[in-house]
Length: 275
Image 1 (tube, helix red, strand yellow):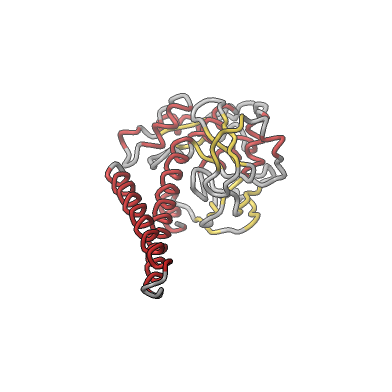
Image 2 (cartoon, one colour):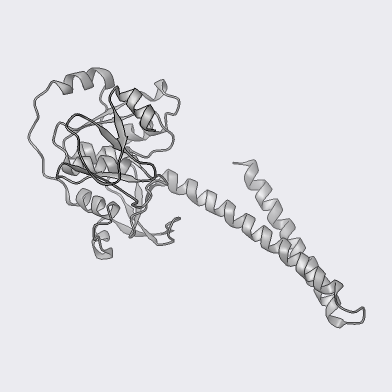
């Protein structure tokens, strides 16, 4: 990651840990499996915060912290990537009066993220506008909306409470795939997203994808348990004497469990056919 970033930016990039001072020379600090946040005091934080959209690091919390703490010269650039991580963060950038530039979906390998961001924020042309903005004077700072600050606090594990989270949205019927906590649904524009009280966050498409993965995992767990149960019941029957009444009961029960396992196999096959 460090080498790729250095080549792309044509300047050195380094791994960091914990709290790192922002380098005025543009030395980007990266670390795998860490969320990256600005803190408003010329530092960036790299910490093991909760996953957002099933990613860590994720783009949404990085953009959101820039929306809160960076100057009005901030420019978020959204490029080709799968799913829609980054769309909610880009919306926060735009709402705070800062710029969002989006790669045209037809020019990248994975158009999902640019398309999702185009639904969430106004369109701006990428290369031309980036050159123009770099030479413009810094405009006046806008007041940061309460819900953007609060969502950043939740993602940063900075003492957010369940009562505060209720101010962001309404309780949904869904559970967090990571910690099994209740998810709050936030509808302050596109994309619709969900937060749990420990900081995990999803837009609706990644939530659907991770639910699908969890369901697939649970079905295979059930199938494994049924096959193990069938084998154990048959072993118990084999070890029973020929005249033992329980021998017949064990075999009957094993047959029923085996039939259930066959039904589960059919369900799994039918799901995989539509995957």
